[in-house]
Image 1: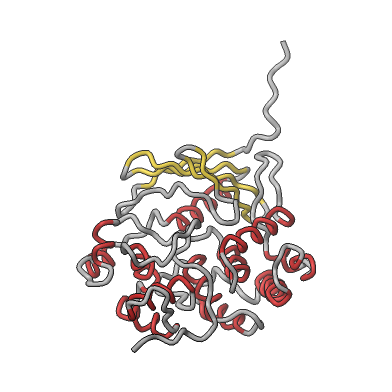
Image 2 (image 1 turned 90 degrees about the vertical axis):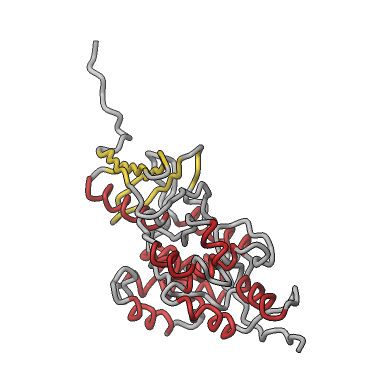
Amino acid sequence: MPAATANPNAFRVDHRLEIRPPWPFRLRLQGSLNGLTRVRGQVVTRLLRIDGEPALVRIRQLTPDRVLFGAQADHRDTADEAIMRMRAAVGVDDDLRAFHERFRHDALIGTAVRSNPYLRIRRMPDPFEALVAAITEQLIELERAGAIQRRIVGALGPRCERTGLRAFPDPATLAGAAPARLQSFDLSAGRALALVKAAREVAAGRCDLRAPDHERGWRRLRAIPGIGRWTIEMLALYGQGRQDQLPAGDLGYLKAVGRLLTGEPYARAAEEEVRRLFAPYAPYAGLAAAYFLAVPGARPEPLTVPRPAGTRWSAPPATRAA
């Protein structure tokens, strides 16, 4: 009888790591807007590419204080890096004790802080992915932005034959894309060009999104027409783990804060009013704002995607009653 042959599609490394979170943690069983993070049963699955090599990561919460990460890849260092990125994405290592001790009796967000110690800023496993998401989400509704992101992934994201899944396209791929092709995905001409220029900065190494000095990369990106403060703050909060950053121009915040300040259900605050409201929560302004929208009645409208706000609003604030 002939000897059994190894599966040619199998990954050579199957690495598993059990994590004990330093703060109460609950794995969010919810997919991502771009369709890459998936949920099956109690398991969150995501395909990543680490230096061109695919890595399939699965996450399952075993008990309230035990979370299992598994990564399949061809090399152990690739599997380790993939697990590290997904640990950062789900926030399993976030120790929020200082935040909760400081704000659990806060007049504005204290109730939400006490009732939900599990809330995390849900990040993306790669800051470049967060940058692309921010550019596509400018000034449009999230459902439409999600459709654009899924088209980008479907057309340009590399497909892993072993799993049938796609990964997010790397900076070099988007840097080489024609703006007209990105426009065909329903992205506006200006934002298509901004996306390509940003991808070129990252692909060429002129803008290192993983460098400790985030501000240096932000300055290079801000020099690109169409990339402003809101885009950088979205990148920082959802891609670089900067909980001190707050995308204050987001429509969800403008509406919620406007209603808080005026009592009018359809009022919109000015961006600087949002910043002033959350300034006392430094260096946790982004996390505090997420808790603010978790306060019953604070969120102005239901959202179907894992973001603490809606779309950017750049028009002048509505005139409010005295």
